[in-house]
Image (cartoon, rainbow, N blue to C red):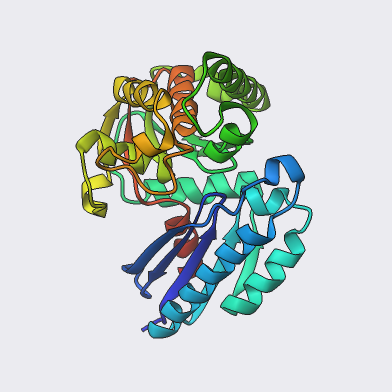
Length: 306
């Protein structure tokens, strides 16, 4: 039997692990909020404390990989790492801690792996399937039409929008307008980069990935404890996205944490993520979206097992 494989995703807000057996069945999943991108948008480099948090989790994950006798693995770096001037320092230390290859993905590759992971276990549908992956530093859109995968990556993560425009506390009208303008500008640029995304209204099944969507499902269902089967493939209306966005926007981070389903470490950036999500739904004319807990980790794992 092929040996198990491991994929570690060093994202802007969280560091996640998937260990799968040789047939692609999940053996272990783990997630830790590490906020690797803290300050990257302003300074251009990864902060020492953010790297230290992430390195501690990588050491923990290496121990899990040893427990499962992982034969092959990869660490993938996304927005925070690819934007950082000291990325080589991070990549070198991450490699030494995990003893596997570290790949810094560009936005196109990130979108492609996310699409492959999110769509592998979906039921068939007459509509084209489009994914929206709202990360900490970037947001990826991808859709396959006539056998061609169209993908764009935008500098619109929930951490980036929070740090640059919205702020972590209860949002003022001025800050909300600034965040909306930032999001609209990025979406305008994405639509110009690939006009395919500007001609989709009414024709897509929208699938939402990553922590913003998963936390929204937990809030909307009142789930105090995370269960993958209760979050995966849940239908969310655009009205729910807007209602939670507006409700949380006027609260402090401490007040947001009082809601059943709020994840510690997302309370200060979730509103920005929901703003991005709602804007994307508006642009593509999607009245609802399907959540997916299968994502870039699953896409990279499938690639490792080929």
